[in-house]
Amino acid sequence: MSTVDNRIGFVRGEFVPLRDAVIPVMDRGFLFGDGVYEVTAVIEGRLVDNDHHLQRLERSLAEIGIANPFSIAAWTEIETELMRRNELRNGLIYIQVSRGVAERAFQYAEGLEPTVVMFPQFSRVQSNPLIETGGRIITVPDLRWARRDIKSTSLLAQVMAKHAVKQAGVNEAWMLDGDEITEGASSTAFIVSASNELITRNLSQDILPGITRRTIIEIAKRHGLTIVERPFSKAEVLSATEAFYTSASTIAVPVIEMDGVSVGGGAPGPVFRSLYDAYLQDIMTQPAIIS
Image 1: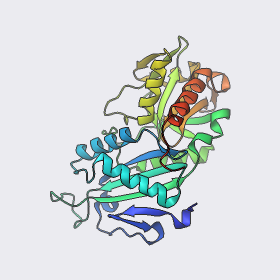
Image 2: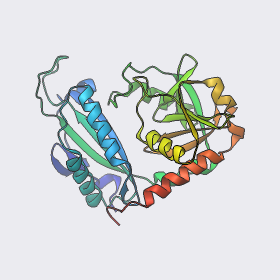
Image 3: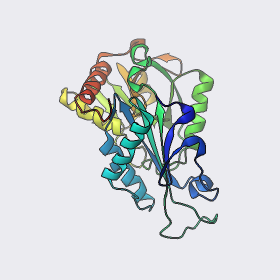
Image 4: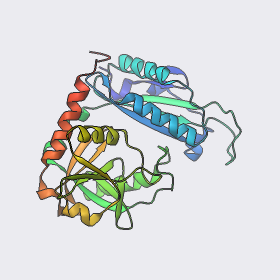
């Protein structure tokens, strides 16, 4: 089993130990955050929702005018090789693509060769203790730019939000535009209303089109739940019967407290649990890449 110290990454076209990997100082990803990223969970040797993640990567690249350097099949082949070289059965694979290397200037030449960096992280996203106990969140102002639908590597607002999470001793921050929740610092926000509607913000340039969000909605429809995609307020969270958030790195986490106030009776609810269990069951029906 590989460790943090001897992980193998894919950097600028080669599989290399991460401790030896080098990125040029003049890379626009370093100088400007001029790039995008994607992350796929690995659960028991399976790439989770991977085609949808790679389709979102394609969209993010297109939105900022970077040519996708690989096809979905080629990306998947590299991910699979990273899994094998790192003996990665559970964890995450990150992809970062910058516009490339050039003299520092805001304007850029067309046709730069994109810089690709990929690396694994080891974790068991399906074994998060918060699944059983529930998580606590705070609210923070949404300070991000206007194109939140692009999975940009420019993450300073999220870094600040996550630092506030750490200082508060909680698990996540939900971002506020006025009194409306946009999304989490690294997650999609859901609530269950008293009338048993599953509510999450509608897709637009205001939020990232979450891949786990997409799958959870599909499962909820199979379970006969009514899905309502619209903005919702902080007050609605506090009056909800349940709340939870989703992401590739957590799958889903029930929310039992927001800003020190109990949510959903202070315990994970049955809607969350049914969706979470169904999500894992679907994953385990897929063939494993590595055993």
